[in-house]
Image (cartoon, rainbow, N blue to C red; front, top):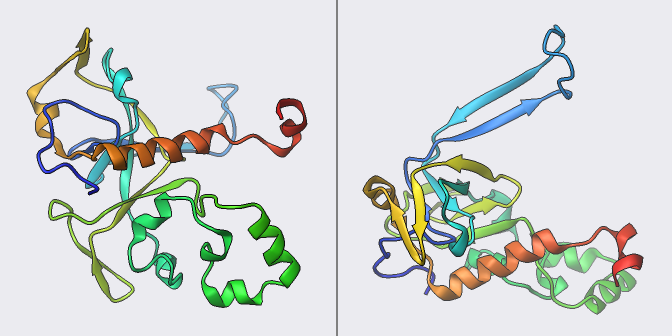
Length: 213
């Protein structure tokens, strides 16, 4: 199962929330002089349908959390026959031949296929995590399908100050914060989120590998 039948009255990593404002900041260059007429930046304030907590459970405290907006999935997911039956397979490692639609994989040179297969299982889309369909999530139309799958992008994370504190193991959270929570992941789904999120940040650049391997 992906979601708990009865969400608990506390906040956890992966929880789905409603009513949380996010920001989208765009900038053309660093601002070194506030009087520079060429300073060009824009801040968009957005109220997404849903947001997801990306703060580890034990760090949800001291008046802040990090969240990521829950977004509609991409239409090109359904071009891959390995994905389209259940999109949450994207959350798991898979063999390289399943990362691409079969037609694209078959067009790769044999030596390229062999090289990729030798690398073993890995994540196809390392910055994305798909949320399973649920009655609490609004359905939408995509590629002539009515679906309730959503996703988060680990690149899109917002720091948010809010009314959260902790006393020992007990969270002290305003009731409106708890009422904003609509879904809670099972420990198994939360484990998948934690593993993929950890690997996303753990990856080392190629130029660093010789020093840390």
